[in-house]
Amino acid sequence: MIARGGSLAAFTVVTLSALYITLLTSVMSLLTAGLVTTPFGQGDGAELVLGILGSSFLIVALIVSTVVVTNAFTLVTATRVREIALRRLLGASARSERRRIAAFGTRLSLLATLAGAALAAGAAAIVYAVGSGHGGMLERVPATALVTPWVVLPLAALIACTTVAAWRGSAAVLGAEPVQALGLAATQEAGGADERHRLGATATTLLIVGLVTLAGAFAAGAITPFAALIGIVGGTVLVVGVLAGAHTLLPAVFGLLSAALPRTGPAAIARRTVRDHPSRTTRAALGVLISVAVVTMFVVATMSAAAAITATYADSSLEDQSAEVLLVVLAVVGALIGFIVLIAAVGLATTVSLNTRLRAREIAVTRILGQGRADAARSVMIESAILSVGGSLAGLMLGAFLGWVGAQSILGSNVVGYVIPPVLPLAYLALVVLAALVLTVASSIAPSRFVLADSPIRAFARA
Image 1: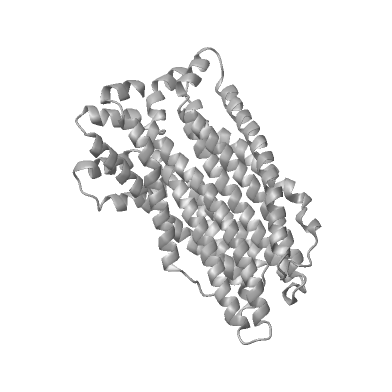
Image 2: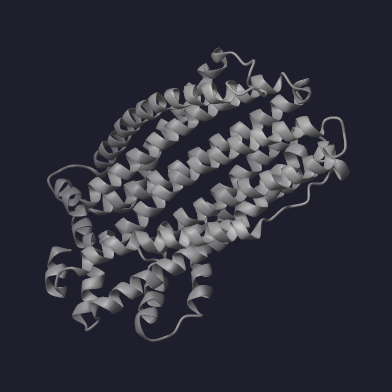
């Protein structure tokens, strides 16, 4: 049942990603065609900005979906340890088992991509009908602008990312020898290896290169909007570095938060669980980090850019038209953010839920040793809260930095003073963190009840 849940989550995420990618390309094509009919579209600058914005959204979608699908396949594989180990004992090789899982990921991604693209075609037609039927910049845009043949490239990248995610997600268990895999089954099902990680040379290099590149993009943004191309590269490298070093960086954040908890009762158990299982807790918190970082990045970028553009064109002949264009762009960006948040939220809920169910044996042991149902449930919720708050704090810092640099690199050369001040809507960002906390804790309630439904002995035997 857990494996089916993980596969369904992966299918849902890939379908939403394909829908998002296809709809994004059509909407950006419409915006580009509509912008040409306004004074802001007379030149290559506006088209370049929209192209960079679209590319940024595509890269974000691919990164989010890859992280989510990798986590889903990691959890699915962890539930099949004994089944895989048995096939290994009967002669199957680790490579053949990994190829089988990767092939399953490819088939899943193909079906999900077709489903998502079909849904996106209908959604794009609705967007065009609504946008062109009420006047404005899309009124004279032909319906042919919806068709963008190059959409096959990001869709092919999505299929490739899903296949790679399935391959990577199967690595932890299939690297073991058959007898070892049988012996490690309970450990892997509880969430993977528990060894502590140091920040490796690769992650360190990626983080440094990403930061230096983004600093260059920020400075170059005062000269040319082409600096955004540098920013895209730097931002991608930095995010990959954060993901590569997450197993070191996030446990440090969790440690600081855990230090404020009581040293007795359910809180003490939650502290110990977070400390002793860095791989599992990091994997669960990555969903929170990605979700909050994505929302924060685009909120900070759009609000900062909107404030700078409004100040630049205030009391000018283009004030009204700039407000109209800005309103359309903000509406589109808001809808695209919503799609990415939905993708990340599905991954977050699935990861937290499956992680809790995979802890059935561990929870059963603590109950055998005397912990009551209520205390066990509270310890799981406290642990979920630590992961949510820690992931949210990391996501806020990463997203705010990337959003500010993104706005500066794209529009810095076109605003007064050549520097865009960062705008941090604290109330909105606090709402995002609260939503992540509620979703994380709520995702742990149902599986906790499932795990705690039986007696400790029966739960231990079933796990």
